[in-house]
Length: 102
Image (tube, rainbow, N blue to C red; front, side, top):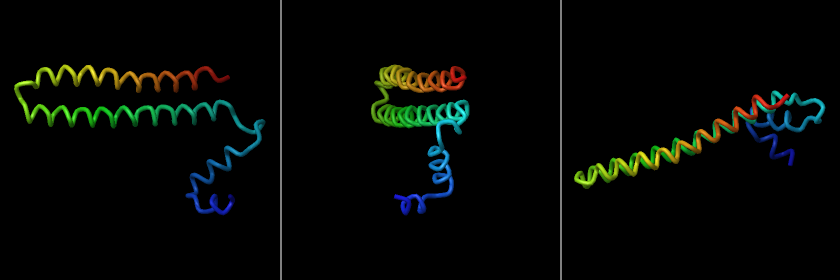
C-alpha cells in the first residue's frame, strides 16, 4: 500500500498523512473547515454541470422549434430551481459544519 502512496502527488500524500494522525492531534475546527470546503465544492460542481447541460439542451430545443420556446423556457426555469436547491443544501451543510463544531 505504501508503494501506491509514494506515487501520489505531494498534496494528496500530505492530506493522507494529515488524516492518519491520532485523534488527539487533529484540530476539530480545521477538519470542519476542510469538510465544509469539500462539501461546498462538490455540492456546487454537480448543480453547475446540471444547469449547463439543461440550458444547452433547452437552447438547442428552442433553436429547433422556436414556436414552443415559451414552454421550454418555463420548464427550464422550473428545472433550474430544483437543481439550485441541491447547491443551497450543500451550502447549508457547509455552514453547519463551520459554525457547530466547537
